[in-house]
Image (cartoon, rainbow, N blue to C red; front, side, top):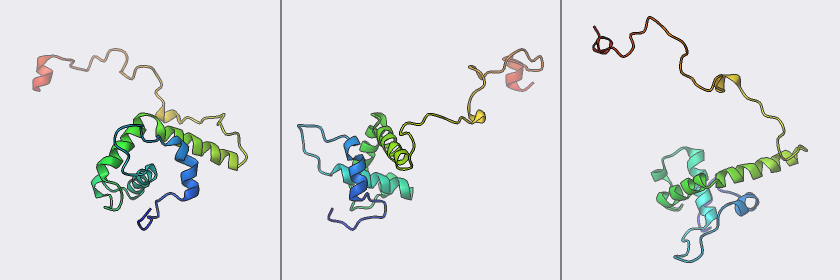
Length: 136
């Protein structure tokens, strides 16, 4: 890195934890111009500071490249793999089983039925009659 680091940049130790989960450049074709670490640093900068992609600083990779990798890694599950690996490390560090065995579900966020449409007949509704649509 030939630039001044941002507070959101990964340390060497942090990068080693996730490096194996970030896809390597594909063989053949044009060589990658930016390291995967710099791309991840740019993504972390954007997510931490909440700026629009076009507002990434000029010393980070161009926003189009960064956004491309962000979406590609989102689609192929890379972020899920990184999250799962880090969660397992944290759980092990506090002496827990790496895989969670219990989940808590908030009842207000879970649908009570398979269909959310109202059931039964309500005589007060006008239905699809033309008078109801025209407001008569």
